[in-house]
Image 1 (tube, rainbow, N blue to C red):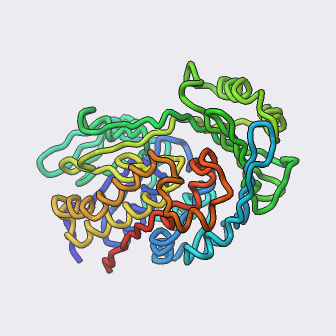
Image 2: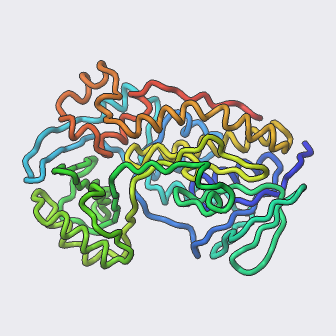
Image 3: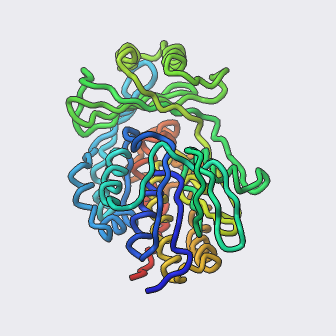
Length: 396
């Protein structure tokens, strides 16, 4: 099928950008991916996805590969800041009863799997779009390597702090909702509190720390801390370590051991927890996908699910409209905007309130209200509790 506007630039090689490129190529478009980093970003915390995201991965022929790389989490153990166990949740029954399929996979493993499936697509690392000039029938991009290149469309898939969004949209056209929290994530090797199939979390006043052992060699750790407790945003690795030590030095449980191991850590993800909300995700020949335009919040763990779904539907609508971006962009957002708005609203609330009475009483009655709003719990009860299914259109 002949298509118009087939030459498409995508800024960002995260899950949304890679998924979009895969589907665009399948439909006969010519995607080019730009990535500021010198290589594919790996690492990150566990990503949980189910339902529509699993369907799309199956359509891409990648589901079995991701399943092999997934981790089966069966239990959540909750403690207070003094190390006293407050509750224990068997998460296996919640997953079995509410999800046909449910995978927990490292974000980096998902990106790498899709990236390998994108071989043959023009992917340029250490290069990003610095400036955009929209003309009548094309867009001229000014690239970070000093060159210029024309494209029919440009897609910003560059995350919460999207550069494409800042280039194209006025600040009055989007809002950043801060959830008054910072999140830090890191990986520890050969952690001495190995506990298979288990998330463990310690929750105190305005802060919490959680860990999950992927295997005997790797443990992922996440810290959450209220904005009010941080005077200055840490920029360097040393500043991040210092902030975590000073903020959690009074915590008991396993926290002293985790803090002691920070000397071995050479990378810490640290950012504020925010949502981007926009009335319109596109302008002219430019559109934003994934966290660039809409993110429920990192604490809900739904960002990667929506990245996959948004990318699939955007490519599908461009295919259906034969490249007519006026039609495709509008139909794409119309399919998704209401459900994403509802998810974003829930992302600002306490999940114990958002959950149905039946599910909360059946699976989560042993946990406190404080624990119920933590990301460790949120990761497992997202779509099942909200009972808000997303219908995946067929485009082929």
